[in-house]
Length: 265
Image (cartoon, rainbow, N blue to C red; front, side, top):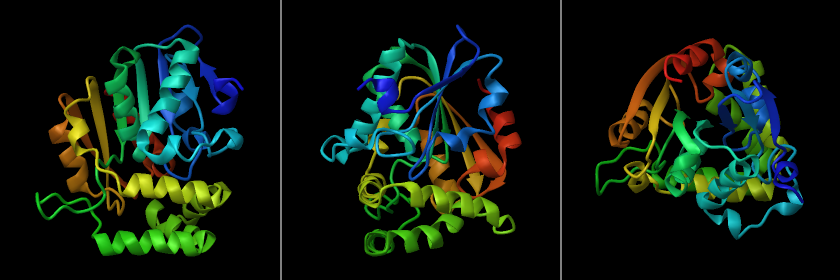
């Protein structure tokens, strides 16, 4: 099985141009980038893909051991870049993909020119021992994961609109709900545990390329204090607090997101 088939890689934009790679977040797929990609297609070769276990990737390639940590997903990213022989890419990651892209850049820095992190979080759990605020108490996160495992479809329909925010635009929450529901429950549950129970704070200082941190207001998954933490602990970064609310500005506020990216890329 080829890497391009395994990860359902799609190529658009300017042939021969520098590459911009779009990596989706938990429970999503590459269709979530449809509003952003055209804005950069005249300058960049646009690369989009689905992590194994998501979207139209090859589900048969899913390996629970490989994807028991974010390094397995970082390997997906590097596999795609190696297969396409890409270097100096602009990597655009949403949510957990911000950390996945960062981990990949540590492993093979020459593959990356810069990182665009949309709603990043290096640790979702609060850490009282250090005063770190991640946004979740342990009991709340345990309850969230238990609810997902006991009734994944019910969890999806209740949590997706909260994650999306923008309650005055219910169609956005419905889209995210439908995306969650298309993901295999067992794969989603493992990815959720890997995501929400991980701690990548120590990796931030090792990320070798310049980064743009795009932070939304009223984000229940990655609150403002988390985005500020990421910005402060990256070696070279810019921080933009968007007026967009929720966790998915590439869907809810694409024009603002594009504008912030164009000022950086």
